[in-house]
Length: 499
Image 1: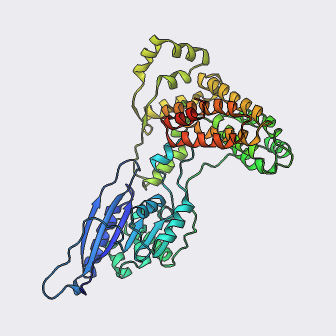
Image 2: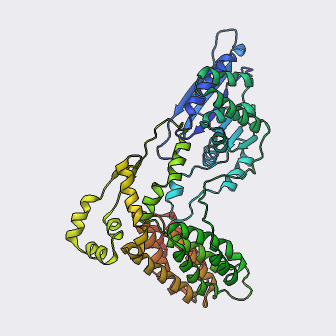
Image 3: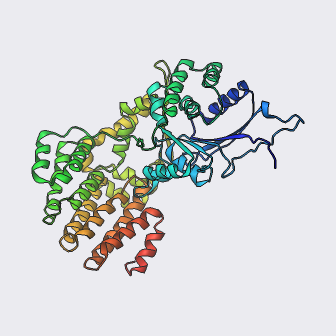
């Protein structure tokens, strides 16, 4: 039986811009300082956050080299079941590493960041496509020999550092590699870039990882803070609506105050009055009111061109971009927005009568098509900023636009259908309310979602009175969320005779 020692292996899954290559370079320097041979490779991931770059390193102590001159053969890629340390710099990447078989309960120390950077598939999903963070963490506990979790994103932000130094601190603190902490610190010093900042972030991460932070640490994702609800509207909410629905209504009012004005938020509250009246006696959870309140707030704040322009030119967005790229006060940051307006968006921003006439005219559609296609607008330039601010300034006339009038018709049809179904089948009405989540985004994403939603709403009305109607609508919604081309829901409707 061979008694030869094997190399130690480490896999790092890092997103673009997180400095995975820098970490790999630091680890190579640490290994050299500690008297280890090292081989480092990387496999680039796919752009736009559909995957991460995998960095793979193997280490072998020079003191353990056999006297006969043989040298270890080191692998270029990680093999399932053969990795000692796995580092994932974002929670979904933890799940992907587990899926690849790189994390095993008999061998692997898993170092996982609990923060989220949503993938393209999560953002473009027609429903709530977010991965279940709790499920990923539970699987991580089952799969790893030792699990260390911490919020690397928050630590980097707190210290004004790039996340690379936090990653290195976590590796050192978890003690998955036999290197002294001072060797890691010296590698940062030798790099000579933002040494004080990187050392502070390294030390904070080192202490968190050494403490073995429990995997129940919650995942963090940014959220928009709702505006303060005026007293008059707050009193209406508390006097008219069930206690279970009030938090949702308050957030919805705050969202619509930010989107338009107080009168618009008041209209939202008034629209929900007839829905709250449909709650059956003893329905303490107010499921229908909660579902409609959430969906109505989202639909009434649809992302039209005015809203998109407003969000892209807000001072807080510019400040957030500067924070994300770690820009110093004296540095200039240029922001380029990639826009792709369609004829429908152009006409939707015009007064309803004019926009409808242009949209229905083939000749005008051809003329307007010259202004469509990809556009690059630099919002850090005077011209680009003023262009988008002028579009955002149309907010005061939003109620007169074609897009607003079209959305109002759709919203009213949805609320009417819910009001009709609730007395016949409460659960079916709740499911139809939940289907609003299909209507989101703008452009082609919005059109596909609205089309699928309309198909389900038509089917729900025909299903009223049948056993299991709510379960069927839930299945239709899930089919629509799983396939943005509409083929899955088309098959389901055909099987039900509702196509």
